Length: 295
Length: 295
Image 1: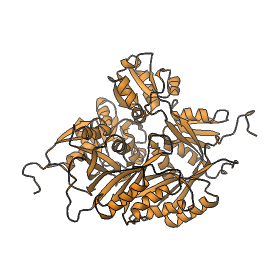
Image 2 (image 1 turned 120 degrees about the horizontal axis):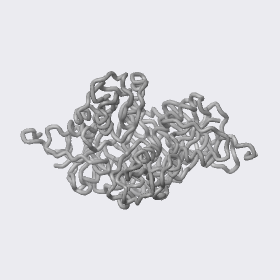
Image 3 (image 1 turned 90 degrees about the vertical axis):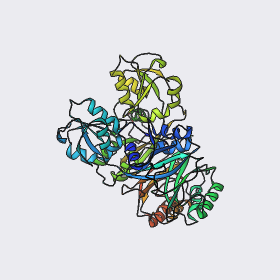
Image 4 (image 1 turned 45 degrees about the vertical axis):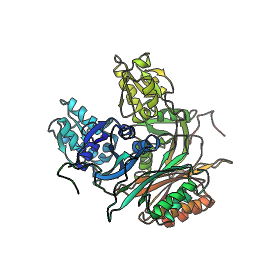
């Protein structure tokens, strides 16, 4: 089974996939963008994708939301995985952090480690690049200079870098929720007794100019005692002020109050799409390796 | 009067400032991040900042929301400006677009121009860098190679590049709303007859685990016939699932139904902060140059 993910080697996506799919039978397929990881499932080039969905500091991962909303009608979320993110300071060789003259990383780790950089590397310049893996690659390319990258220990291992300091983020509780994607033609994930479920929806065309239209739409859910755990507005790309709304609910889209709430929402919104119902913290939806089966 | 903005020369922020403040008396102060532009007003180093707030394709500008929420208690939004964004293809010299081998830009223009790149520059590699100005700078540094940047014509002018093609974004209606910031100790913007107003709020601590808490909070506004034009959730940075909510309303925070709605919201939320009330599409809140006064 092929699983697409945001590469290259050493990204946090690769690290999450390795941990989530330990003991499973699969072929990891690195691609250059989140959009491409989603598109691989839409086109059938991969059976699964593991993509970042939300981070506890930075919020939802917009390329994931937008790819699901605009470009992947036949893709569905079938599982989720919370993965703790550890930012490390990585150089070509063992040097004192205080001797570092330039720090490279993706803008997100730079923001997550701002206080560390100010207090421990006050003289270093900071430069944003496209990914943590790219930052590590560049630091090692310039091995004769006192440069360092912020990225994963996996990136250091992949490119042969040295971890100068582990866990340098200012906010200790740094978690990324990943989503497992599959083709919507596949059977839904199996139910398990006592397992909590989550449902992700996107809806739009509420008649945005009428006071209360959004509140009425959300009341279709909350009036039935269903807990909404997340709401995010995104542009419909038809000019400022036109939005679509992504929401997460507790429960399964095909059961009881949630099913009724979604039906009521359909009467108030132009379009409603269920992006997936999936077990919270569920197992990787991949076949187990021989001898490692679960039943 | 000093106005801080996201530099360096050639950013869309600089372009917007030049247009918005034409005929006004001010000193433009470029800084390296949006956070620094907001912080300059908070510390008194600048009297105003002009920062990007929302884009019609990419949505709200998170560093702006987060700087206002977490780091700028004494800064307020005092005006807004909608600025049309034009992406140009820029090289060191006049070459055929089809001959370009590498395209550099910020991830956002890369996304905005994806179809153009696929159809007109199918052989070019694409690489993300930290800003459009940085992309132009690098392309000119490597003037002997067939590289191009996606960025503003102002960046091409600032660094001496050649515009190969204007307006190459796939979505024609590409608008960024900028916010004018000032110290909250300053008097509120003057009222003008017939002028529409907008109010931006942030609130949190709703008791997130109770179904309907958000709907009840929003109903405090909508029940009074007040139109909410935008809602955005952002992490409170205390773990997955804890959010604060930014909303835009029509009207002034200190008048009639809006004032009553905000009072009612205060009873349902742990904290409510008015980030600003300001005239929609208002004039630049800067002194006019001599001879260019408005009265």
